[in-house]
Amino acid sequence: MRTSSNPAFRNLPTGGAAYGQYGPAVGFNQPQGGGPGYGAPQAPADSADRPMTVDDVVIKTGMSLGTALITGIVTAIWAQGQIAAGSSGAVFGAVIGGMLVGLGLALFITFKQKASGPLTLAYSAVEGVFLGAITGVFELLYPGIGLQAIAGTAGVFAVMLVVYKTGAVKVTPKLTKWIIGAMGGALILMLSNLVLGMFGVNMGLRDGSTLAIIFSLVVIGIAAFSFLLDFDMADRMIREGMPSKWAWFAAFGLMTTLVWLYLEILRLLSYLQGE
Image (cartoon, rainbow, N blue to C red; front, top):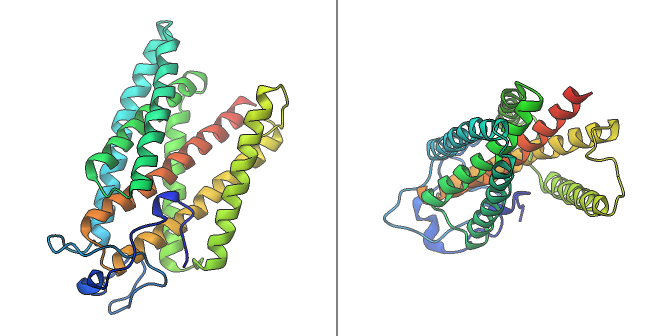
């Protein structure tokens, strides 16, 4: 079975003949009358819920993004005010608190397989606080960098959606394994850089050097290709007729990749503007 590189889309409920009672539905990249996707996840039937559609995923993702943007903008403005007033500790607390709460919600949603609107919106709001606090700090150093990072993230997302819809890059088991392997390698390098940095050893991956810029570009590329797997998994969820509430789970999965991509683009921009 093909799996997504996004942990949120792994280990979805499977099995259940009743699940197929909805019949095939049209997904992101599926013609009318198409059959179920290869290795698509399945969930128990919910007679009180209709099958999810592309519109469900788009609307839920839009609501999640809107929530993150609102909380992020408010937090960024607050963070700049706090730093100007000499209360940088409060901003640091918002960063750490947002990161930990966001991680906790992400782990709960992922491993409990919770298709929940309130949880997904709560995760988006918390991530907005986390990203907003970080962006507020960067904005003081590099004015305008936040808007540039948002534009860059939106651009990458749009390009990868077009790539997926046009079939320019096919999501195959080989591509999936490559992306998952690349993500694992990048994570190992980032953790190694963090641990060694505590002992005064600089691997040069996060110091703004040429190597750091190259590494950020590679990570951005991996995050971009992860969208293809996320789109494909959401597409197969739609084609298999999963209940509409699972659109919230698809939105959550896309949000995790968007958060990762935004952070990496923000970091790269800071390197380029800091030269």
